[in-house]
Amino acid sequence: MKALWFFVLLLTAQACATKKYTAAHQLPDGIKSATEEKYAVVNNHKKLLYKKEMIFTGNGRIKYSKTVDSSGKLLQETEKKLWFVVESYPDKEKYYCKTRWKPNQRERISCYTKKQYKQNEAIYHYNKDGTIAKIADDFTTFNIQYFYYANNELSKIITKDKNDKLIDELLISCANRDKNGTCLNEIRISKMTNNREEIHFFPKYD
Image 1 (tube, rainbow, N blue to C red):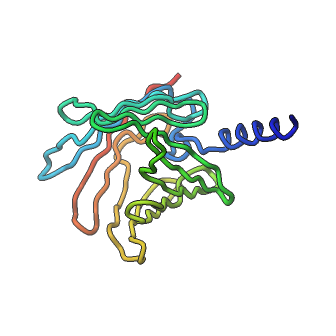
Image 2 (cartoon, rainbow, N blue to C red):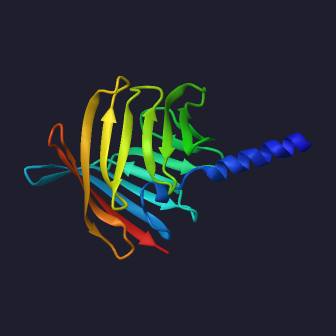
Image 3 (cartoon, helix red, strand yellow):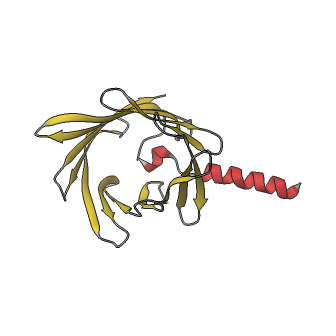
């Protein structure tokens, strides 16, 4: 019985240890919900790539999300359960994603179908403040994304392949913030292609 209780407490501790979405994305406490819109910008014309609606838990994790394309077609829905997250798609099986806390500020996030076929896996490395330091694909591309910060703001993401060859470098800046410090308009420009994207964020607070 003691062993069983220890196992339950261990699982609970691991679940609580997972990093907050709000901390990872430098969002303030108190966000109840938000809408995120991502645009490609070509010749000053914006093309909507996706629109994502998110509802947050009281401790800064995503309780539910819904992502649609520019025509309103459903791309993905997610729902947080006690031990995992369910990802639903219109044209394929549901994914069941588990997060395992690892030493040294790391998480392993793995997604499976109901038949236990692994679909993807990534290792997230975090800084002490909960922001993302590095994301290593551990199943498909094996690419690694490195996150850099300046003046406590995300300023650059560098992507390299498994042989350490540079794939892309995104320069990131915030054009507008609200009174809580949330970035409402993030600009991303690729140094490799000069492609430009904008992320518009519309938060709702308690």
